[in-house]
Image 1 (tube, rainbow, N blue to C red):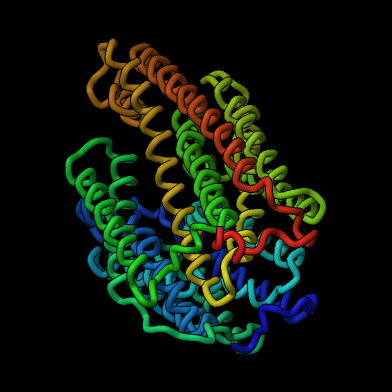
Image 2: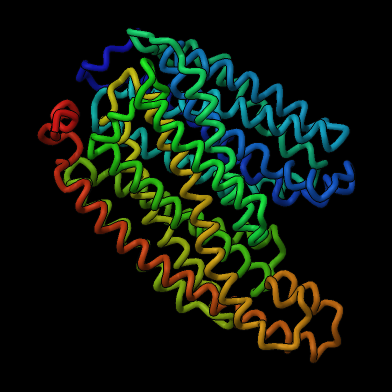
Length: 514
């Protein structure tokens, strides 16, 4: 261990340069989740994947990333966080080259799998190393706020940058943007970043790691598939199987001599509350992104690239929220900031409930910006809580648990809010004479209308867009209720905490003893 977690000195220039370096792989990791959104037609033309292969090309990356975050976070705590960062970024660069020049669908799926594994190897280290580099709570809050903002910005920029590249280059160029950034991290990490590993290393829990993957992977697969494709037996069974394995994982964590995750951390109110808040925030943030993108493309009629460029505007609110919450964190209690963030997101959902097909474009964009600002503002606060509540030698596993919870929150948001909107849409359309495809989704209605005469097409589109708006209104009401509940939970779970840098919070040891 080369960094003393107990020191209270403020970080210097090298630490801030190191943070800038850590933000590069964080940005790429988030961007790669959506960088292929606009590349699918080009890949289909070039590689001729089957329908199943096309789904795996899109989803393999995020599935393996979510499944491996916790095991890799625990491994980094044991063998060295910087070591995993260097190895993971180098592997990510190599896998990106393989993906860019894939000659078949199977090769591209394998490359996407390698990208997911490599991303999970270095992902937890980008957050855990901040704990070592910034011992001062106020500086650490600012650093984690920057990390959270970049993570969200990457998720937004990925599809846009991919679309811009496809206007000028072949589909493989979407992967090449990661290579220089990852190689830069590989070269400069030994110079700018400290190494850290737990001073007392227990044997790595291989069975726990296997159970973690076997629990998270089918849950993420089941939730995402049910959200996108609706009910079907296979993803439902996968979800149930994942939950069952999750129960076995809990038993393993409670009985293993050196567990993958120390479950006693969940007895720390700050830690449990922060992860809960993170999950709910991502539920709101990503759950309504699906509606926003469909509204811009299928209701307002923008092309995918134009819609994604318009969707960048809400990120202005995200940047303001991260900066504002970070500035207030040293003077205002976390519970107050979290409640304010969730109430702001609730106000954004209220505004989204007022959007209809004839609304000015400003209304949904402002509403989406307020939802995003409130959600990301809370995440920028709770990230510091997760790392501070957990002991320094468990920061990697703790941070990875938080990131996995965010991934699950995103999937649940898309699934539950998407399901609510889809159910209302189908109920409204079932009473019409529209073809089955048009009654199923708004996209199906737009496709069907393209083959109808002008007046019939207009009637179908008007009916379908009104039905979509009704579904969006119901989902927005659900979002309001969830955000109000989250505000209450944040108050109850976090009201004991002082402002960052203020008087000492209730020590974790006392919470564990209680």
